[in-house]
Amino acid sequence: MSQKLTFKLDVTGSGMRTDSANGKHIISIDEPESFGGKDSAPDPMSTMLAALAACENVMAQIISKEMNIQIEDISFKVEGELDPSGLMGNLDVKPYFEKVKVEAFLKTSASQEQVDELRKKVDQRCPIFRTIKDAGIPIENLWVKN
Image 1: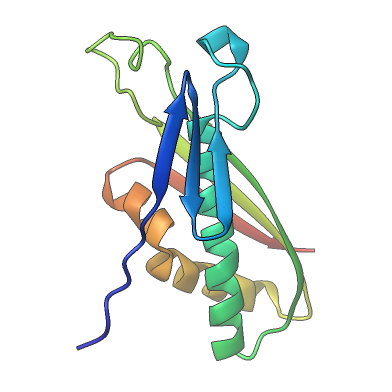
Image 2: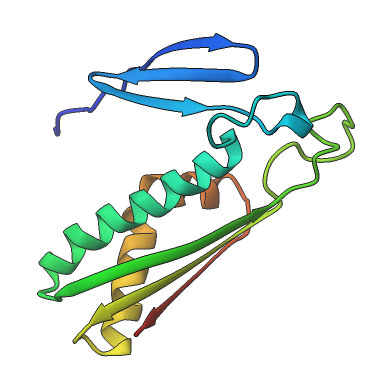
């Protein structure tokens, strides 16, 4: 049996802003002024999308080594769509992303077919991608060799 990982954060809030401590690292999240925050840090939903891209990147680095693929550079464009009326109290509207789209651009000597295979393996093993997909949220993931 493999060892389980436990992730712990100490979180403090002031108004709409939260500061989460993970060891020596601080993750700050706020809302824009239009949502009652001070716009002092990214909002929670954008932070979730950033975590998705970061997780995809980490998994791509791990899996590309397993596949003997060299990634010189990787960049992402990530977007999520939601209707804010759901989180503002309209119970007829989902308060979470209705769909998510990921585009990855890789600088690599690998073929597009190898990049496609890498993406499939990342999709299978990326915990954040799988959390979104397995929750039933449509997620599109397109990886392109530059």
